[in-house]
Image (cartoon, rainbow, N blue to C red):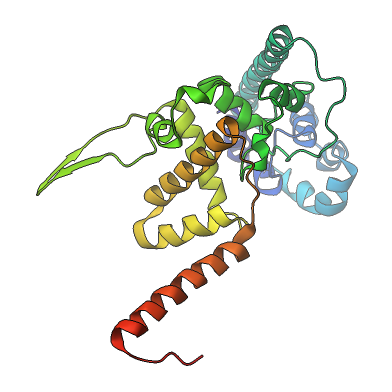
Length: 293
């Protein structure tokens, strides 16, 4: 919210930083905003505070973007938004520190021989918790949820806080997805159709968010499945279906220990073509025609 307020205050003063910087809350953006609030107005001096790679790639654009009209109202709004952002940033850091303390308290210490396997990158809101991946692996007895498509240590931690470590409380993956609110919710009897709401627990929302990101992927089978379904039934049904499949894989991995390996879009397309070919051959037999390759 406060990032949007900073962007609005800058644009109202015709300072177009948000159009040049993808994140004005980055180190370079905050350095320039702090300098503006301290009285610096020279665009070249402000740009000199940025990272060297940013100066090299976008130096001229930044100089033009900083040629604005500074007003008292705009500077006051910018200062208020910056203070609000720093306050909540500090609150988040305190939360991360507390998470680290709780993990250390309940799970003693980190493993003596931590895994050297590289972890999936966390693009946004990465928790500042030392050894987070090792704590999670220890909690789940070495079962690594990041082997699943779209799961990082961050959303794994979020799912863990909602479901706990013992997923055997749900007798099957169907019970688990039903509790998450990801299973079909209709009760049909003849011509009567009743909508049966499954609710929307926070954990189900986390799987939906992950599924939505998978629809944008180019080399993941679940993404290809979701896009194919989206073309026929719309985005909401596709996201729910992908989320359900991902939740089923998560339950199987954590309860039965079946590791999931992403085989990619090509494998999914091969299976799909094989299925189509079997259907075509069956239809050819029924119609008594011969297929020619």
